[in-house]
Length: 344
Ligand SMILES: NC(=O)C1=CN([C@@H]2O[C@H](COP(=O)(O)OP(=O)(O)OC[C@H]3O[C@@H](n4cnc5c(N)ncnc54)[C@H](O)[C@@H]3O)[C@@H](O)[C@H]2O)C=CC1
Ligand SMILES: NCC(=O)COP(=O)(O)O
Image (tube, rainbow, N blue to C red; front, top):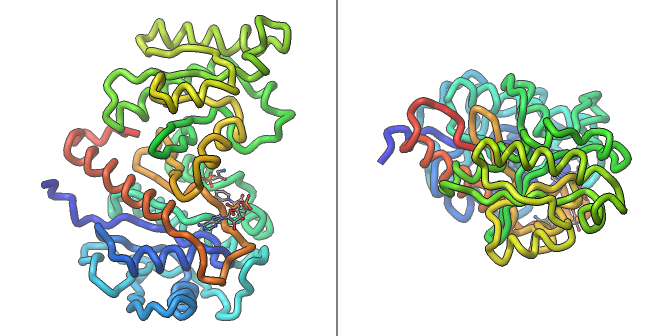
């Protein structure tokens, strides 16, 4: 057993006006399988406990706490609170700059603790991008904040469930910007990160399938040239580097083929190309993993669900799966790679 086993996982609250607090309380009420410290507003967690009738003992730590205690105690939830505290009557399901700001502050503190190795991984509950932007914080999402604050040049977003692994060449950009953003360098880097991620998950020689951008992967140039001019040469470069990459495959069938077992991971060219097949299989199943960071970060694959926030009905399954994956990825890291090289 690893000597690092008791180092807690950090879990960020996300947007307090969304379902983050209630799914976190549900996860704790079900019983933690590893130590965990939540980063976020303590009042929002107490309110979620009241909403769900879960009498958890919310234990507040100081922002400077070195996290050397025992953070897996039945009936307790440990929190590093954000400041200033949020109002007790913060409306559920509404964009609010205060909640957006607190969500980002919690994330930043968790990143700092992950960089200092005080926590072994970060698991994030959803933040609301409009609330974050309302607070004047102009990032597309967690991924870019994680990369910048950890001084990581290249990261990629991977979504996984029991049946598929998908990694994105481009993330949160307008569809009109996808084609001008694609380059051989970006494609090759994404293929390399895909292979790295699979190896971190125990697949020694991953089969990386690359989806084309255009219908039928461009039909030999008839429906667009990106597949021929950008994606195919990058696949050839990856193959020359020893990666078992193939494609560009038509985007409408490549995920089905991966699900049948032909490939270990698919590179999707844009957000919805990759996320639709994952979420269609069920948002309760999926986990978002940031590949390339110096620490493990997993996340729910769903958003803040403002339509159901504060009703107590939110499903904690994706958070539970994200927690389990972060735990298993860090066990592998601690047991197989003591140089600290990122496995994922
Ligand atoms: N990891 C993150 O921080 C993510 C954040 N977002 C952000 O969340 C906000 C809302 O995004 P939407 O596109 O509306 O997607 P959403 O995932 O919040 O909601 C889509 C639908 O799924 C349902 N749903 C989502 N999670 C659920 C759960 N745990 N249990 C039961 N039902 C659930 C919602 O009620 C809604 O009907 C946006 O600001 C978006 O950017 C979206 C995805 C991931
Ligand atoms: N669609 C995925 C998503 O919005 C999550 O992004 P991030 O906040 O993890 O960067």
